[in-house]
Image 1 (cartoon, rainbow, N blue to C red):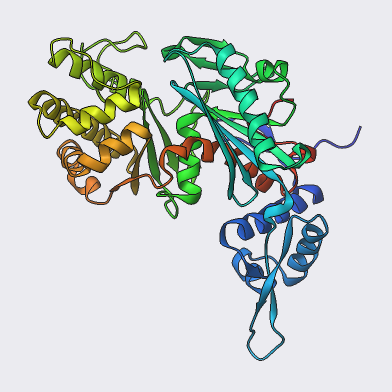
Image 2: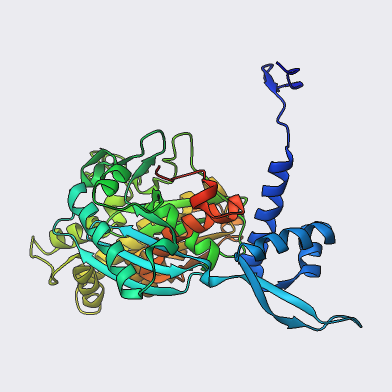
Length: 426
């Protein structure tokens, strides 16, 4: 046996092995750093890459040559230099591969296909028969949707780097991935195993839908440029992605962000999670529509599905006192919930997303902001922007499709050959 590595004393007194940085680690770090910089900020010249990353010109030249040989990056024209020869611009090659994003919602399944730089190539949507869809039905629709977008776009399946899936619940990562979504009746659903059984052989990356929406908005939408943000999702249910110093906060078992199940009214109305007074039961579309029906003496709202009914409620506000009052209360509850987020996390930015959140925000954002200001500490609130999401109703699927891209950038290599960290099925 070789001599054991040096140890360092942990601040709590536990002796921990010192982590050694190997040549392989350094190579991966440099590839990841340069690939990420080109992905988010390219096209860039080698000279610019060296200045932006702190890597030497020789390292940048060697690593970009490798990435070029692997066709991960490509030339993107020339830029004039100061007195010398024009410099070659580099960018990530959109044609290197494709990624798919899946949004498993409570009312339907959406599947979208993108090239590597997130240009959308195909979209399919399948409704689900019940707001409490059984896992088998959802999985069948996902598998069908993946096959359809690949066929519609005319690409070869072998070019797909992976499929990201956003789900309405907590994702337990382990030897066998399990999804816990008690509000729709899912307990320990082995989602990746079920998808494999349906014939999906592509690499799979699974995460909570609010977190995938959060990553999408941080990369390409209203969260871009912020280091500290909370991206909230309001649809039938309610969730949030908390981003601290550029990283999504996950908690000890990855369930952080269940903002919808924080208490807004002690002993309040029953939530579908089994508790009482949850924010979701007051601002989630299902809860809002239930309050509207009650205000109308049980009279049903017009519309074939929940989204149509919610739109009808918003439209009725001009002529219905009951509708106006329910929406006024909803904006107040939502603002109070946002005030809690501001006091807890001190974000630069709150982004309001989800189909119901966007619909509500487009009509009532001033009232929501006013209520948030009434429920947050003034000096903290004054430093927080509250904005609508920019990716629209596709945000969860777009964010899900970024999961295999994130694995590519993290590894600095194709996730199908390099492996990845979170959310990959074997």
